[in-house]
Structure formats: structure tokens, C-alpha cells
Amino acid sequence: MSGVKKVVLAYSGGLDTSVIISWLKENFGCEVIAMCADLGQGEELEPLHEKALKSGASKLCIRDVKEEFVKDFVFPALKAHAVYEGRYLLGTSLARPLIAKNLVEVAAEEGADAVAHGCTGKGNDQVRFELTVKRFNPDLKIIAPWRLWDIKSREDAIDYAAARGIPVPVTKKDNYSTDRNIWHLSHEGLDLESPANEPKYDSLLKLIVTPEKAPDKPTYVEIEFEKGIPVAVDGKAMGPVELVSYLNEVAGRNGVGILDMVENRLVGMKSRGVYETPGGTVLYAAHRELESICLDRETYHYKELVAVKFGELVYYGQWYTPLREALSAFVDATQQYVTGTVRLKLYKGNCMPAGARSRYSLHSEEIATFGKNDVYNHQDAEGFINLFGLPLKVQAMMERRNK
Image (cartoon, rainbow, N blue to C red; front, side, top):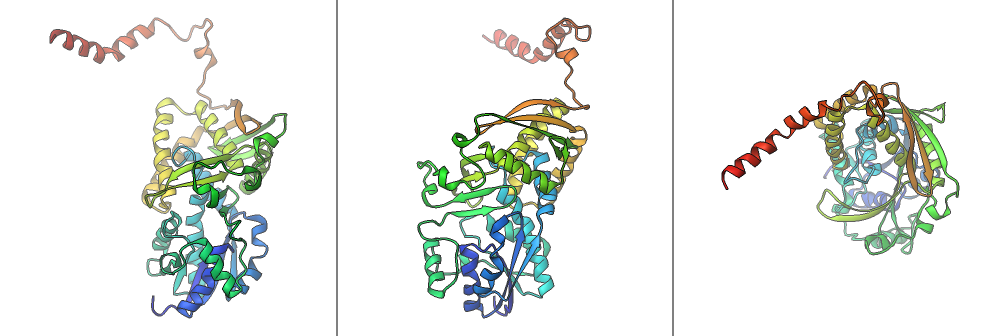
């Protein structure tokens, strides 16, 4: 790392990145430029300019990428129905490649020798950041302080900050590791590290009320899709950011979107986190319901396999890879007729389907009815079953011969 004179740091204003500014200057004698991607963190961004300069940065560059995040990352994952380990809606995973791409762009604009991030050596984010940097500028040096310094814990980092007068947003009694964007809010650390502990939801949750505090009457929402992309809610056309923000508010006040899970990190260990994904939970439920009437059986079933792999690629930081791009092309082809409207009932943490319609629906009441119809001949089923079951019949005949 010799010769590093200017570093662009992926900056959030949290504990780790606040400390890293000072550490980089002390250990490399370099200029540090802080870069923050506005992914919808809201009020968290307001004090960042003052905070970054007080921590030792020469400047702070904030890039508004909310629209790009939802349109080019969140919605493609939604269309794929990408979920990690069947539950996690990939809020942090989707954001990291976009942040890292902007990090590389700012480094080019500023003539920086290196980029830096605050990801720990135990986490997934270090992989997500660095794979993206390698993809867009393989010559950039990457500094990962958590793999280099003597700080061993968040408590050590708090002590380091206190000794240097660095303003940090946490204390030793309240230092959950959090990540927030327009798609979700995650919580890790402290009492959550033990799966045996029930989360302290009343003090933990920021976007969602607990189901117990949700209204006693259900809320209905209607979401309209065009080729797999949500475009309107309750008859009102909305852009990507407005739509997700609105659903976050509606679902959040109904207690929808809380996830407590133990997941398998890419680096080999298990970790426990609590995720708040209110609007995302509603959109995934609505999209799945619409696909159930618009996709044929074989495409629907194969797409479920693709969804698992897509989710893994996102989680592993492999967004900018040929395989992810190829899978997205497949997904886009499947969404040609996923156009229609889905009604959902939100009630005390539950998100239940309440009707779906599409002009491209493959569901035919005329065929599926239990009543009389002239379209389906019940007697045709006998020949189908005979042919479908022929391998089983041959197997049984062979076993009988050899007894």
C-alpha cells in the first residue's frame, strides 16, 4: 500500500467509517475523501457533512442513487423473486454493488490511488464491495482496515473514537450494527447475537410497529404491475422511489415485514439479524400472486430454481457477473405477460392475497370449474394416467417376475 496519497472511503457516518477516516490519515498520511450513496437513509444523511469533516475527511461527496437503486437493482430482484435462504429479501446485498460502483467513479473523478471500506473481515460486505471494485477498476488499491488494524471489536472502536474526539452515533450500551436504505433496515449485534434471545422489538424497530400495536382493522392495497414491474398503488401511478416509500409506510403501520433469521454467511459462519422490509414484503407477495395466474407451470417451476441461484449471486456479491446478467435476461423473458393487478389484505403482521386479475391470466374458470362444462372431458384423464404411470407399471411387473 505504499504510495497511497488519496483515498475515497465508502462512508455512512456510522461507528466504523467515522473511525476509519482518522485511522487512514494516521497510518497512511493520506487525504481521505468520504463518499456516501443516498439510498434512502432519510434523516441519517443530514448531519453527515459536518460529521465527516470533524472526523478528518477533506470533503464529503453524497450521490443520490435512490432511483437507480430501486429501478436497476431492487426491481430486477423482485422480478426474479430472488430470496436468500427462502426468507431474506437482500436489502443490504442489493445496495453494496451500487455503492462500490459509485466509489470507483468518485475515485476516478478525484484522482485517488485507493478506495476503502468499513466492512469487517467476518462479513459478506467486504466481498460485495471488492468484487465490484475489481470489476470496474482492477488497478485500484483496496484498503480494508478491519483486516489490518488492532481494533478487535465495536467497543474498541468506540474507545478509539473517544480518545480522538471523533463523533460517533453509538455508545457501548447501544451499538447495534444497522444498515438502512429505502428497501430495508437491518439490525445485528448485542443481544441479537444469541438466537436464544427474543428481539426487543418495542425499542428495536424503526420502520414497522409490532403486530400487537397495529390497527384492529385490516388495510387493503391494490398493486398494479406491467411486465413484472410495480407501477401503481390503489389506482395511482407512482415512480419507483415513491411507490416503495408509500408501501413502506402502509405496511409498516400494519406490522408487516419483520424478519428474524439466522443465515449462512458467505465466509462460512452463521449470523443472526432482524430485518425490517415492509414495502418489499408486500411487493414480493403481490408479484408472486400475479405470476401464479400469468405463468405456465413449467416456466413457473423452473423460475423457482432460477430464483434460488439469483438470490445466492446477489448475496455473494456477484451482481456484476455474466451469470447474473444472463439470469436477468431469462427473468425478463418470463415477465412478458406478468401484467395485472393484485389486491392484498394487511392485518397485524400478515400480508394475505385478496384477489388478482390480469388480461393475460392462464386461469380458466370454464376449465377448472367443478360444475358442468363442455371444454374438459373427464374420460381423457384415464389415458393420460395410463401413460404417465407406465414406468411404475413396468417396474412392478419386473419385480413380480423376479420374486
